[in-house]
Amino acid sequence: MNGNPAGQTLSSATAGQQVTRATAQKALEQFPGRVEQVNNKPYFLGKVTRVVLFGSLLKPHVERLSDVDWQVFGFLKRQSRVIAPPWQTTPWKRRSS
Image (tube, rainbow, N blue to C red; front, side, top):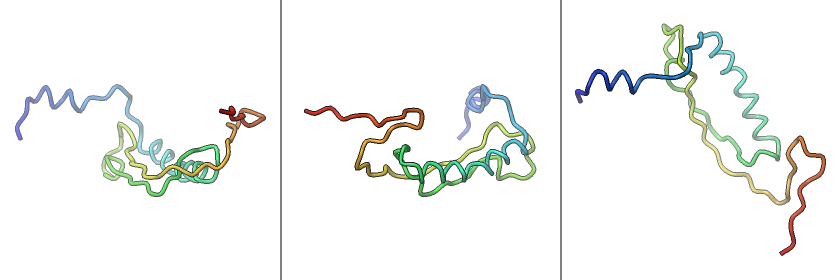
């Protein structure tokens, strides 16, 4: 499909600055810890089941990246009680109907 070159350039534009491969790699290395945190803490309502990495980070010759692309799959956790966020000292109380 041949499109307008100016339109193609615009569709590829990004507002963010590019990052180095080292910065992107650091974010990637920290990500499993964040997934573990989400899966183990009851405050988070979802559970991560799979993460797929894609994009320019997979191309070793690219040194400056626009971002780290990953897709996260998961599901909602079942909640049997009301859980307070970490910054709140007491759980929320349910209103009686």
